[in-house]
Length: 363
Length: 155
Image (cartoon, rainbow over all chains, first blue to last red):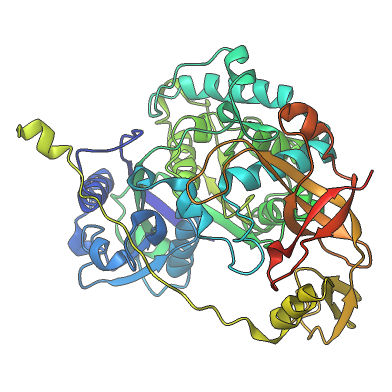
């Protein structure tokens, strides 16, 4: 795959971005990405947007948000799974050589509504809704099942969270959460056993936009400087029902990474300089690392991942933006010297039913 | 109102929408079974998988599930959690739920676990480990809903 990110912008995160309505958040982020790329909207020949109607609280929210995403009278497609899935769709549109220069825009403002009440709506109505599931409850089920399979417990999760906050604390683009004492993590209230409140990455508002170009466009615009190349993409959806194999097997995570690496011609995750994981809890971080055991990349989630900022739905695409900064020597104090190849991971759905991975390479 | 307050203001909104979901043949048969205190799993001869909740089709072979198997009233926990946080529109905490694979079926079905002393949450959680045996307990007058039964520890 030969697709290039030539500019990007990540909105400054906040627990609640209260001084902008959603359209303003999207416009500001899109405008900044165009400026970063040094191109005008007039040059854009298509737009891919990634948003979640349930979280936005508007049905078909793209009807209002396509314009501030730069899509007025442009070929526009919307992706509703996750921001990182949007990058896969955008890459395919360019790889197909139908278009040459596109905008990818994704946003999430979970502060608008009680997140878990929105997640509860994802239960199918016959068998699970009467019992009641949401993101935290299914993460509790995941934590128990994965812990039993891989041999970790909540004390290990305490340490994983602490380590994530330490990495996040060094990332100047994160929320700057104070690094908690491990005792504070270990004594925070249970949400759904064995998951405690402090095991969860704090949810934030945020937005991210990228300008993405085909190899053909770059050839005819030699003054443009790509930040990174998209060389592989992959995604898988697992079963909806949450038995032990589904929860702890992490089949979707494994297959997604395998697909993306194969497309990029990369043999193993051990050949990566960086893997930015979408770990919504300390238990997820432990489980993903257990799967990677023996094939670990040189660095994992240098940005702090979801513990740096976590606009749920966009978090995977934020991971891609952080990886792109690394590959273009713009990561600041958390720069990995000479980083050449990275993977951004994203997940969505109850107990990461969906996984997405994008391989990014230095140009 | 100051300009600073206005810029941070919100407009409150709520949606109230009623849905009527078609139950279909497979779920309808399952719910009718519950009224007889029977838990019926759909069976896919093509793969040998007995599904609970029942499906009209096998997810793996992608062939119809055209058979039925009656699940046992005992099974083992595959995953469980005690919900201790209060969530809007969910039961008041604490309460326990578990995905249980009942005897004679291949997949796990979620429901409440009752009869546990939840005053000591870690102690209660330790009794809900994967592999723990549980039994099905029906309410006296089933109505054809998934909440017609719950799980209790078998021993």
